Image 1 (cartoon, rainbow, N blue to C red):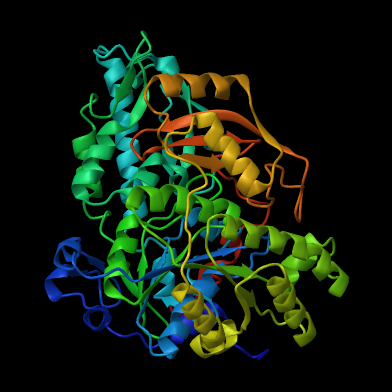
Image 2: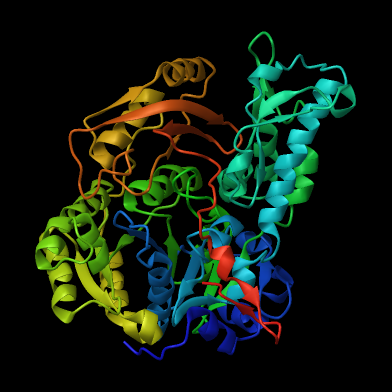
Length: 555
């Protein structure tokens, strides 16, 4: 490792970027399909999908990881580097990633552009506002909130029961003080007092809805299907009935278009939508995937957190809704993470071997979905050659199709060519891709299938509220919807303290939320919060502007 290596931000700021029109032209995007936002980013019009409808799809590669540690294991860096590695081998890859939320950027996780010499650029733009998609989603969400409260004040013609309202406001920032609040205080002129709260924008139904809409027309229909609460007689009240969906669609008509940027080595990268994988479905937009599948030989798409989280939701929600079929999976692992799961992050070979039980479980999850797992061992400066080789060997022993060390953080695409070659081989193999559950399985059985076959739980236990809602949703005709589990990402279980490969646990589901617009049911497990909070020393403390007007401290 070069200890004089520049920071990720310095590398990004020093990079010479290709004009986005040039990146687009090389990818096969026509001039009238490109809507530039400055010189280095653009939106792509969905008319491209009509033009290329008869072109065969690329091979779809999903990038996931073993159970992450608080430090993170470099999954985005691996996704970018795999794209660069495929490019270095003369292939035509396209990358698809989620947009960054300002909450993690200024909180604890940092940005979402990769790291070192495996990044998407312009890095600052990607992490700070970008093309305004998240602001548009926030505005559309909160327009519906405002129309709900105005409806109550001006006669409540629909008979909406204020105590039934489940729709919450949102903002793109971590702010725990907004989780549970009262609105409408100060007399009738300010509306009726009501207990409600905020979610972070990344966890909102509008975010999920934009991420799975096939086109603008589908987006408009899904917005109309949003359920905000029920009447006093128990009948659902929708955004369409509140006359909100049309205006929401207008706010989102540009946000539905995927954003095009580039890797440090010039490959096309779509960065679009940013749902979290622990409290939302954790994958970039379906339209970005669909566009990428028509433009390249390989589409590399990353799912949030581990295979039990974002990958499961990519398969059971995004692929189900979008009719996608993946070709192979890259599973990111690190020496440090295996030591963490083995009981001592400062340990040695014994801890790596103990922690490999977590690696084995994630390989098993991927195989359960009928796909080959290629393990990418992301190299950190403290790793020894012996430790890296041990992780690679353990991965193969536990059933990985292949396992390769990835040094792209320091070496860019050339450091990921071995991984890229293994992925090419894995994607050429036939697979038996399947979902974790059938569409027509009862809601509780879908939850049980995820918990037992993916998490490794003995069973699930639905608290009274969740069980009653499951029965009500079935009766209302929502039983066919897929499930979006909201649980901790730090364990295969719903308990963050259970590391490695826990057994003998039962997953507790405390509540269910019907996302009738997005098209799934959210199952809240354990004590999951849909609005994060800032820590004692958030990343915001280190971010600033220097004398030359350059951003510093962003990572």
